[in-house]
Length: 581
Ligand code: SRM
Ligand code: SF4
Image (tube, rainbow, N blue to C red):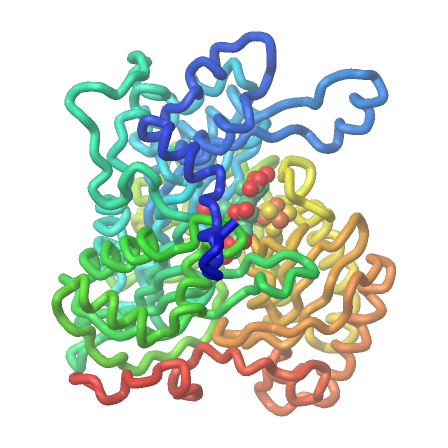
């Protein structure tokens, strides 16, 4: 105990020691994979395989029965495939589609960070599966773990003339922040033995202990905020100059969704605006922000280790000064930006170059059944690319005029909705995975939200709101994977069959919602939402969004968490006097 009256420094979290001693993420992964006495891997290896994009899980539907039978859990693995900016080729799609059948549970999951996930891979087939992914020239490295994750970018080439250049910069950031360890290739790709050794390895950006926690970067292209820029550690918002060319990016820092029920020191947080930089400065800015978090993030408590807590604890001015000290130059003042919405533009859109794009609604990103068959057939003939959207849907992009009728026919043949007849509620719904694979789920999400939306569709029809876009999101726990705190109606699982209900987020993702009801049983959800929708239909002002109505009508009180810096000068303290304002 300290005798000087000063408090002892808190000990490092055990994961820090694990990372430090892992020889750049090797640890005992190989011997654990070779251990035929178990279908899973050790707890230490489970922490390290995350950096390789792999999670040990078990089928939670089978837990109770197997426990009764005195059997072990039904162990399986999840693998996440990184796709920077969400763009992949039809050839890659076909290979992953095949792999889903041969090595996983027959489905592909498009995540809301533009990655793919395989579920249900057995340990004995894991290395083979990852090797196959790498054969497609995609990989799972750093899809999870305490590193920079998949870098997101609006996938729609038609959204703005800034798209292609922004996507290129997003890919450059992804490449620059990729871990350099050779462990990934040794373990999963080359099949050479894992040892490190010569020449000595270095992680120039991360060092031996990588980051305190996961780190997420996105690129938003106004007017679309489909990436939910304010939910991420670091964001870049594209800004055009008077000629419509890319002038640079407004930089945002310190967003994040995760919290724990009943632990007030954990909270979702919207990102703040930090400044502005030119396109050629983005990679350097990203690196300096990441190294700042590497050096100042909390490595003692993983519940307080995200960058949002570093920003909240130290303040925006300190963060900006430290970033600028590392850069050796000053960031510019933020430019104006305006977002309209967070959704996808469904259906066909025609490009000026004779190519067209089709955005397909895929409920909660689960590619299975008719959708899977249709997309496989389309991948065989499509000569453009596939683009995963941040809302878990898919763009069949760059369709040549000659291929348009064929692709349209394939969509129709497999009874896919080419005219977007789904309700506005469904088209704006999103659920995280949750049961049966997610080990952290407290309640259903992906399997329950579609059913709930079907029940609510009767209510929206009756209220005359069938085509009104209302953002509705659900998660199975408060970690916030489905970004539920940015939904106009958000459901967050508390326990089986019970959800916290949140209302009042902004339709464009710039304001978080507020808790309206705690632990609501599923049987009470429909009556509650029915009454809210009826009031909205009758009392709303012209053009008023549901989230805004919820606040104006006093259903919830706003918490002052607006991310729109023009409305909230406190959060951009000192920025307006910068050059370039
Ligand atoms: Fe997530 C953990 C699924 C986006 C916050 N997330 C998990 C794990 C890996 C569960 C685990 O740790 O054992 C889930 C795997 C379930 C399964 O069976 O597949 C999981 N997260 C997902 C996905 C697949 C949800 C989806 O249906 O799309 C998304 C994958 C994204 C990707 O491709 O990289 C996913 N997760 C998010 C997001 C949204 C985002 O980033 O835009 C968030 C909130 C934003 C943020 O990071 O603050 C998110 N996931 C978390 C957290 C809470 C982190 C925190 O700061 O507290 C956890 C738990 C943890 O890290 O301890 C988590
Ligand atoms: Fe699992 Fe919770 Fe994330 Fe849903 S929000 S996938 S239940 S960790």
